[in-house]
Amino acid sequence: MPSRFAPILFSFILSALMSFLVSGIATLRNAGLDDTFLRLWMDAWLPSWLIAFPTVLVVAPLTRRLVGMLVTAPAAQVR
Image (cartoon, rainbow, N blue to C red; front, side):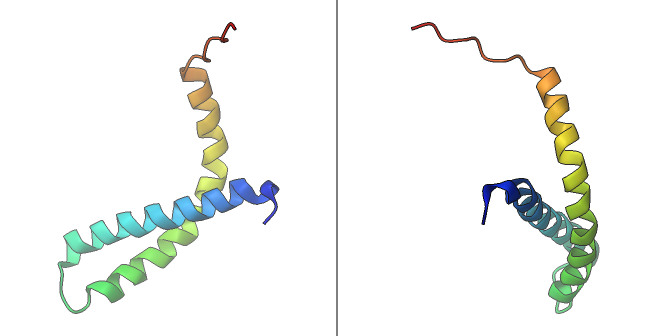
């Protein structure tokens, strides 16, 4: 895959993992661990991911800019 797709791939993987974990925790807390847990989790995760992926695509550049404003650049090294 060409490197120009790196931000999209990053957003795809990050949104998948984060929505997977958060929906799993929320499902476990609300429904408990029973026979329907896995189905309920997947029913919660897939729509969450559909929202999370485009959200990360939009929010990640804004977050990078905000972090750039909040941290100081490393000092130049003298050799």
